[in-house]
Image 1 (tube, rainbow, N blue to C red):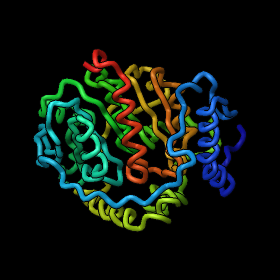
Image 2 (image 1 turned 135 degrees about the horizontal axis):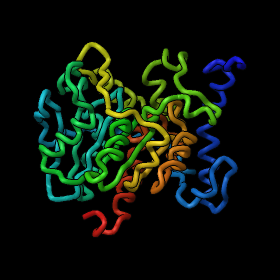
Image 3 (image 1 turned 90 degrees about the vertical axis):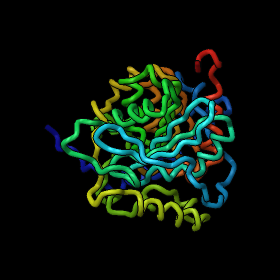
Length: 330
């Protein structure tokens, strides 16, 4: 058997770094009616670029006071959450591994103003919520459903970014009757590296893991033009965990490309054009395995598109949710 090439090299790092730009370019070409060579033509109609030709601009950090924030009992633990209330369709946000339920300041006001009941919470081990209990059989999907039940939500829209996409994806597979729509942003979904071998870049790089969370998750453009936003993001990251050890609550059955094919919920896949962790080709691969999906690349954004380009992110998700007939949503 031939010796496998190293998981990561300077050459593959360079190719990975530019993969996002190339994918964004080909995606933008699709939006103009031309199918780029890196994109499957069968999915051309569903691929768009967001922010193309519009430079990233600095937006002041959110100063949101989270609505009706409190702890909610989910059986053998408590989850810190906030809820704008109201009679609109509920939208639940699932945060990244480096964040918590407090990271959705840009989304709370925007979605509530658009008429949605907007909800965010911290998963176990994150700010304000109980620590992960290794003796508990509760998964992060169990907690999500328990939260929804406690809030009286029969169905809801689900938005997961980065590690928040892991339980969001499993929920779509295991509890499809509860979801109105699914948005997966800048996420690897917890799928094993071996399933990405057709792609040029390789995840799990040790040298990338040794860099700061700021370098990995915020794009060069954002770090350059918005120091106040960077400082606010870092503050939330530094307070993101409620336990000393890295929280690692299981999501349930691990995700795989084969399991993605079971998703029937209408799905929006969002990529950051400058995301070092899950660049656009990853989302395009997911799209080829999720039947009822659309993909969107937010140019210049890194692994935290919801924070770096919130106006584009919010508009994309709200427009996606509103694209369904009312009869479908209810």
